[in-house]
Length: 173
Image (cartoon, rainbow, N blue to C red; front, side, top):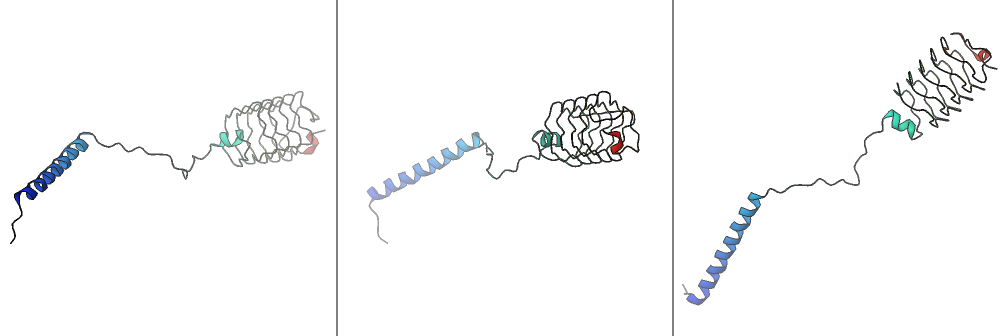
């Protein structure tokens, strides 16, 4: 066994002691302050799905959507597919529904005053007790639509103010 000179061993021991003290000090610091992980939004994050109302307001078709009591006054809904949707008690006054597909839609008690329904498909739609005052129904398809109790006063394209459950194109001019 060879002996090391004391001059070389002492600095080596001091370095080891300082290194251990540094590790101990670092361990004490990290225990006092817990690291908070911040969750960053990734580029692959999937956006939350749009509600039916948001879809319609962004002019996206929404067949079979629940739009009950929706406020769509003055909205441009032209050419949208809203077939089989529930628009009961919806506020659609002055809305543009030209060429919209409302086939089988529930528009019970909807406010469609001054709405533009020109060339809209209202076949099999429920328009009971809806307000269609001064609405434009020119060239609309109203085959088998239910207009019972609807207010059609001043509506354009309507021959009379009373339509029945058997309503077909004879209700229009």
